[in-house]
Image (cartoon, rainbow, N blue to C red; front, side, top):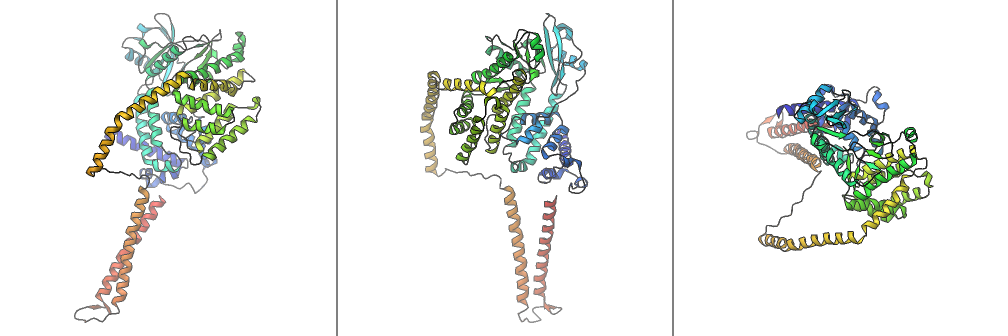
Length: 564
């Protein structure tokens, strides 16, 4: 425990120094981090020319993340999907981040596999490629052949990566605790919740059995779809640190030349890919959240293959309906309907001015409905919607941003294969289909049954709850607790101000008393005189001087503290 604490302090000090080096003194000097930076290193960046200031603030934040390492890079990559939390320029910088990690030795990979499977590698695989197919911050991938003859890919987790990630997560929690007031002033209202969500995501990513379950779920959902295929995970050969998956050959979906060589229509491939993805969102509510070209393959027969299910998004039925309602409202040029759908979609939506919100949505509608179909862009629409979400601080499910990001990626793929490809035109009919599903007899009956169950539960507990309240009121035990947050700094300042005011008032009173004491006539036998002044006068002036000296010292300390 003590060793971890020392390690965290050392790492936090390094983080603080990196922030200062890139010109973010305000983050350090405005938070408890300033206590961890030695006095000798508290240099001002206002003097001299610093090359770092030739870049924007957003670029410097990205450079800091790159220097802090893989865990911080992964956090920034996750935040790049959260337009409700970060401004668009910072999201653009975070999207540039890449976790380029060199592979670890194949001997170590073999040792991990044998340790996890509990038997020699040769008993499981007849072939095992020494050179990895790819490498990332969590693990790397090797191609192999099972003893039964099937070609597979083997994902192997890096040695000690779990311990390193958990150490960095502990560090992130400590950093948020130290800088939370500053982050809230910058508009990040729930930094601790963000780190908690990231911790859950990283914990799941460290467990390869979670990815295997997601693949099996997709295989079940798409069992009847001939145009779409998901590789089979070998659950019996997989553990939390090793994942064995069926090897599937094919070309990248953007390899237009190969598609034409196979006699496939690139336009048909693009349309099939979009249909598959929209089916995931609007029909099943569970979707592959990272459909970049490297994760979407095409077989010679035109079958699409999705690989890498480390990132999967999910939406509840109600979220699915609300998300579709946004697009339906836009298609109908109904800003109020869009606003209501946004409110249903948001986890907490405290919109102070609903009319202004509707006006901004109406502006988006006017801008896009005036465009020709050829001019419409999903990336432009996604950016505008994300800006509105950020400006009005709507806390919407993270899956929404994953969907918008994925639609933009798919639009880019579509334009490579299909010159007239328009994502919005594909989304529109799916939205209409969802609205029909929402108001179907089956769904209405399901909602009525749920509401009735909730109402019945309320009626069952209401009498006992009311009885307890009445008893507490009759005994005088009813208490109301009010918690105020965010006023600690103000209260400390007010307390210091009151203390200084009292000292100043007492000092002034002593001075006034000293002046009044000069007006009296004293018997020298009863009131000694020193240098022509009564002793009581000297005492009063001494007390006043002492109090003024204390006030002077407190003032200097306060100025130094503000200047740190």
